[in-house]
Amino acid sequence: MAQDSGPNGPPHGGPYDAGPQNSGPYPGGGPQGGGPYQGGPYTGPPPPGWPGWAPPPPPRPGVIPLGPLALSDILGGSFTAMGRYWKQLFGIAVLMYGAALLVSGAALAVAISAVKDDLDLVFDSSANNDDFTSETGWSLGIAFGAVWLIAILAMVVATATIQAACPAVLQDAVLGRRTTIGAVWRRAWPRVPAVIGAMLVPWLAAAVAVGLFLLGYVSLLVSLAPLDSDVASGVWAAVGFVGFLAMIPLATWAWVLFSLAPAAVVFESQRPVAALRRSVELVRGSWWRIFGITALAGAIATIAGYLIQIPFTMIGALSMLPSMFDMGSEPRPEQILVAAGSYVVFIMLGAMVSQIFATTFPQLVTGLLYVDQRIRKENLAPVLAESAAALPPPAGH
Image (cartoon, rainbow, N blue to C red):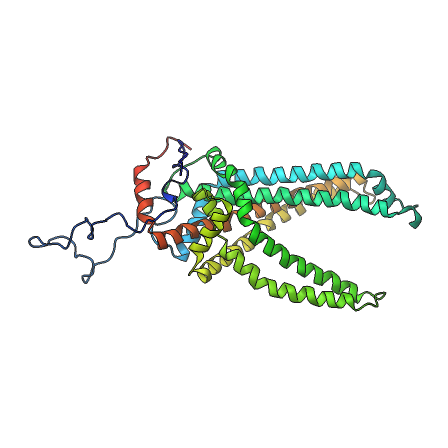
């Protein structure tokens, strides 16, 4: 494939390009390409297989050793990559989530402006039931349904961009290269449509499972309503919950099977269908191992995200105290808004930082799992070591 080289990183793809790597760096049989040693007395270190011989440790030019990775290597490499490249990762995440928030807010403002009369009717305490028509309901439903759809699409694009940015960072992190936000963006953004296409299958599987659960939950609430005398809602509740339980294993299986597709899209510039096939090929035979490491990474991200939110919540609560002391016995509306506003700002800031970590860390783990599977199945380590030694470090960040 064509290579897109630049001053701040290796060629796009480069040593990660798909292809047979099984010949190894020593194609002649022995370590130097020849047969067994046939000279005079051997005075060097004991040859492989002799008592006391141990293989040398694999080289480590970047965040991981260039050999089959243990769990500690994958988790440690992910934390190291996040620490070394936090500007690139968090910068793109803040940009995309901020843009998604702005798009959603703008859509909400347009929707409120379009259905202002209907909203005034809903909140007008003097209105009677005859004022509400089916047209009012349809108008509100379409307006806020469109807002919900736009918000979902914005979050999908933001999440896919981060899923593309993490492998783009790892292309340099594994080789020990420095990079810039601009270089990561140029690699990641063109691959976002392919990442979205590759993740449609696991996303749809998860959406079906969630939809069945919501169907069962809503139907259960309807069946418990005193005015409901129809047993159909109870049947739908059972169908929803049973379908949800049946979909959990299928959705989990599909999610793990295709979990390496975003990395294949970025590392190898694969198209969506080819990336899905590539992920299946790499996961085959290691499904349980990848599932366990991915689940552990998700649990770590969830716990860390919760811990990140705690100090923001405490600071937000403390920031309300001065305003509350100045309110007096009859607080004015603007005082209440100021006090609540500071608390909401810190809560939203903590939620954004928590979301960035919860999205970025599992994707770094998945990217290193991709590299690990290629090292194990395609002998990629010597090629990476050669590329790391051949590429001089850039002049600056």
